[in-house]
Length: 305
Image (cartoon, rainbow, N blue to C red; front, side, top):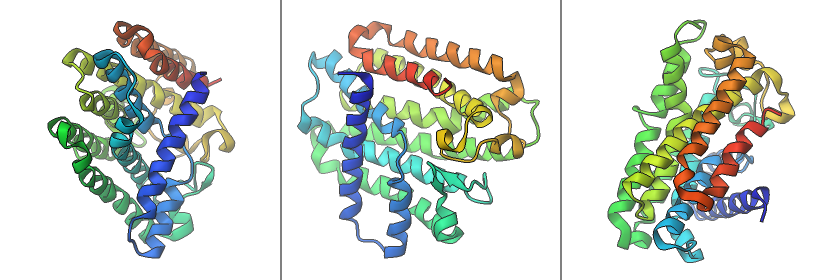
């Protein structure tokens, strides 16, 4: 089965889980509509795909078999929760007080459709719902409860004030100041890479992966996350609305600190390539078991083509 087909199947599986979780949720109609608008707007589902793929990798390495469908169903709520956290961050990032974007995933941003106040509440709702979903799933994973709680803690830390929220704060503060290389690394390590890496680590934790495996997927995630963000920075200059799903050139217009602004377009492309090579290198100990994750890393660069 090709990489694209496998990726699509994983996305469909995650989308089904998200639909189930939202359909059974009591919620004020306006708020639920705003939440569904953003969570069902499409997207790559990269973070939950990485989570499920890390879970599968750990199963293949530790148990010498792919996980059974029932085992995947047990952990799918956590994959969906990771996507809820990511979508909340996009809703808030798009707000006038943040990046002030008009489009996301090819559609008008949440606040453009529902108003600022409802968009803020939709983001708040998704973040809280993510933790509700993970906690409600505890009875299904009682046999692996310590690992599940560790995985939850890793995700919460990546989404919190030591992770994604600090990255966004630094991103806002550094506008119009393109001189700080350390701050650039800080922004992308916290705003983008942290949740990507936590998704991979959580997947390995839930399958009882070794410390060596955790270190390997962590190294993969850090390099992949940086390559992904550099590619995003490049596409903001070279892409269009159809390709990006949002208005191009917004980073430059807001004077944001980006890799092309700091290093130029050509060097940024070379840096993204080097990070992808680093990411793939971390997967070498797993041989063919890591084929999907290797292909996923290479697909990040394809977005630039």
